[in-house]
View 1 (cartoon, rainbow, N blue to C red):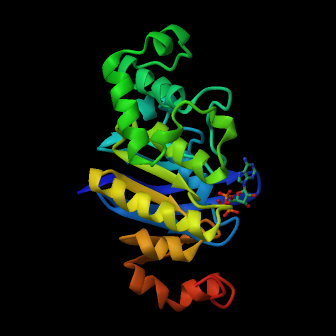
View 2 (cartoon, helix red, strand yellow):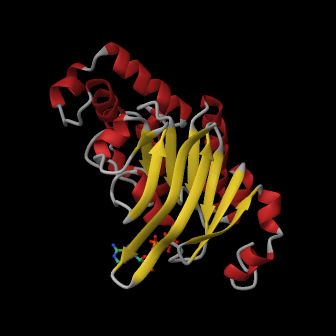
View 3 (cartoon, helix red, strand yellow):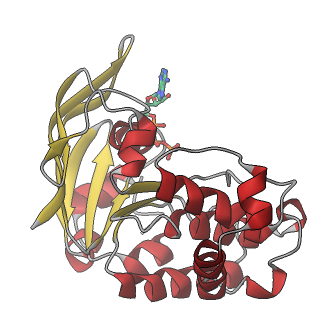
Length: 251
Ligand SMILES: Nc1ncnc2c1ncn2[C@@H]1O[C@H](COP(=O)(O)OP(=O)(O)OP(=O)(O)O)[C@@H](O)[C@H]1O
């Protein structure tokens, strides 16, 4: 069963056709990678899933419900969470506070920086937040300021901020960008582990080691068009994909 369906989506920026009749079906529980060269339209497509952009034409449905015209926070409330290329965390707050804020927002249906809530900290929210920090191996650092973390840890923290909201669909925009090989491998392991929660994931990624380690299905975008789609083994040997990547340098 598909959880996300993209039908004939077009998006133009002035004279540039950033998305050209894109069709995509993401199966519930799968890791679906979207790859493609720079400027292919990957981020534009992702932005159409979270309400940051509205397609000129076409449809995007999540769990059978149209996402078009829905505000980003409402899409988030419906179960779609996004991890950004540059972590969006509260640098001046501790790790546990960073997790508790979205936990309260998820429970209350509104995002508020409510200091009183965090100080008094309802037991169940605190416990849930600590569990999530354990899952991402950051529990030892829970009282440190988020701003003092390494880049890899900041991305893990942001992932934890998404997980505490119990998302149904997690969008990962280059989850290992700028990481060392060791941090990249840790992130792959972590994403495999959270795969046990049955969260559907869409991963945009340039690092093919990450893509082939995680993805069940891959869609390849080039110049705003899906040029290939299939299992990792099918995509690896696809000549159109090799060509889009300038002689296969990335594959
Ligand atoms: N807000 C915008 N206004 C004008 N052009 C835009 C806008 N956003 C994206 N574009 C253009 O649309 C095209 C697709 O961009 P997009 O960021 O979606 O590509 P991408 O596949 O995510 O690339 P990368 O891998 O480099 O992040 C590019 O040519 C980009 O310059």
